[in-house]
Image (cartoon, rainbow, N blue to C red; front, side, top):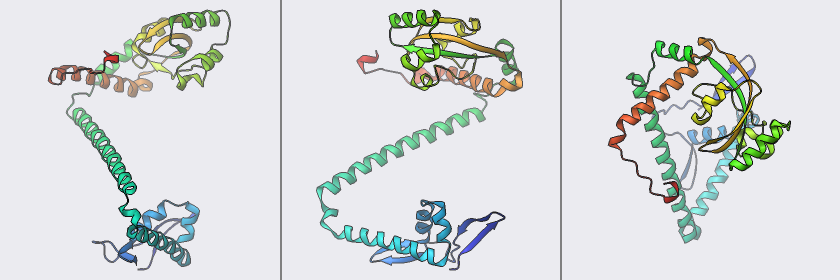
Length: 275
């Protein structure tokens, strides 16, 4: 079947082989009982570098790439006929691959089911906040803050670090070398700009009461002990904050919905270290 090419002003963008037999797989070559189909050819081609894909659109390039796939199939055919295919080691590794694939399928199924269930709740209005709810939230919480934090494991270390930064030590440098929060430590403890509801509850009220430049702590949370520094604050318009507020309100509504159905699904923590 002749190749069909698609062009743009900048050159070739896409190569597509159109088969006369669309209902089934079109076979390009056979190696023993194994087949190389056009779908496999396209899939394998998509995995190589773009520069090589541009070469394979030529007749010589297509044939050379097909020769590579033929060689791979010949190796596979020989391996399938060998004692290796019947060896305990091969069978054990195949079983391991099956278990890994089953786990990936289970995780994918759970993710898909959860996402579609949440989408359904939104469609039915269970999670959707009204515009008035969103505007009311903005009237109460219209500020965005930038803070840095240092997270450590003990109150004694937190107290020591808080005293050192209050005496003039670099907060950013202290965060880089001492903070357990690796995601922010590399940036000197700088956290993402946040509105009310986007910070962990143990820190939230304190952060929004702090003055600019103020250092506060130690403050205990479920993660450890924090030292905070407030770097900036600004007021956001409703349009600037709307999407973030809607996400926060949706989360709040989901939390309330989960609380309402929790009696149907009793929770038991079995591992003693988490009790």
